[in-house]
Length: 163
Image 1 (cartoon, one colour):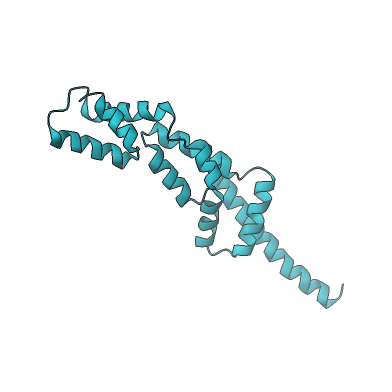
Image 2 (cartoon, rainbow, N blue to C red):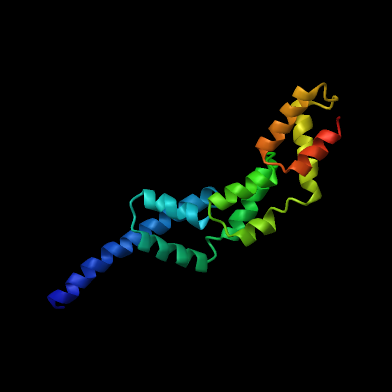
């Protein structure tokens, strides 16, 4: 083996070790919960890994179906909805995580009837089933539902049930 070959091997070995390290860290993160590709890239960038190497690992993991923005969007929507958040907030959070708009539209359809039921349930859970007393009470309940991420139609429907 000549000196140029040994120099190449030394350069490749550390890169392979780095790629293995990045892959291991990403897989450990995915073992805890689903992550979007963007979230994983940010996590690895904060660990001072090279952006090109991160992209290579993420491309390989996407090819192996270990990283999937679609699976992430579905799981994220399910969990946030279960926590009582509305479609506007969930869609905004998915876009912050750079999930493709087509996936956001597929998993967060604000016209579905269950969002209206969820808004009513969240209002009743927080304020009870009693009638709204005055305008201040109505405004407080509407503000609460707005902050949870429900649309104006969903809020009006939930408030209309007890007015």
